View 1 (tube, helix red, strand yellow):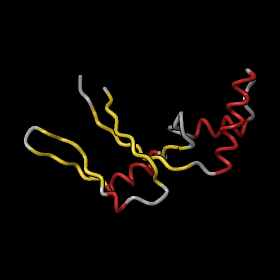
View 2 (cartoon, one colour):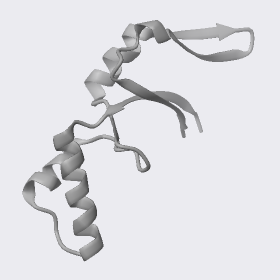
View 3 (cartoon, helix red, strand yellow):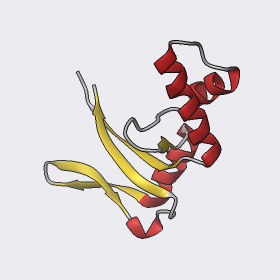
View 4 (cartoon, helix red, strand yellow):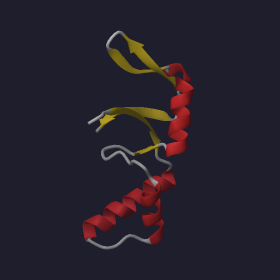
Length: 101
């Protein structure tokens, strides 16, 4: 079984996105189905942070961000990533590093 290390960049939700998320939470609490706009928003998101008003960048935008500010780092028996924080746009407020099997 192999492992891969991934990086996901998060940004603050726009006010309209936060409104949709609030409607989703209200629907969940009442046990009712979502309006179409809410369903479309949820399906269009790769990752919504569960404890903050943050949304993960879309696959293409995330891949471009990785190319722009990350470099693969290797030394002896170590392997990882370096993120140049100076290159990050101000809208990026969280970076998640995770391993997948």
